Length: 175
Ligand code: GNR
Ligand code: NI
Image 1 (cartoon, rainbow, N blue to C red):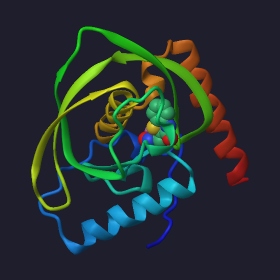
Image 2: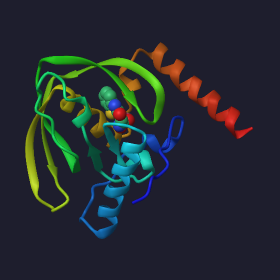
Image 3: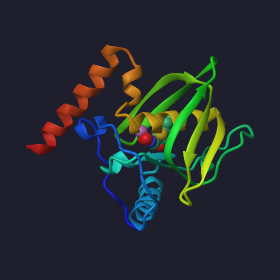
């Protein structure tokens, strides 16, 4: 296993639309292992492959440490080619953060429940209902696969402010 570098704003790769995983090869398993190690090291509760510069539709997640009020939480797991197939009308608000936008947190409103279809590392197809933090996290991660970041749901003022801050920081590091 190896920790990979997490790319951060304003890296343009974060805006790529990732491509489907065609087949679970040894390289894909290695990527999943590395994503877990990178995610736990960060630490984060979810990670999309594009955050380690791999434009593939693949996510790792572990919500174990966030078990609140007896919600059913999935164990460490990999979602390959995940899709939201239905969403609740009802919404919920969570304060979100993103490893690619370090130390920035804002409340985001999303559907409270979603039904997700995905493949696992054994190539088996699943459908599952998500709610609570699981629902928020899987939507946040699937957004990454489409080049969407949580700041895209904020006001233009807030979004521009955070984009400017990271663009300036990158310029300073480049000097
Ligand atoms: O670690 C993370 N925490 C988090 C908190 C609220 C909503 C979403 C997330 S995902 C984030 C890790 C990350 O950036 N995944 O893409
Ligand atoms: Ni993120």
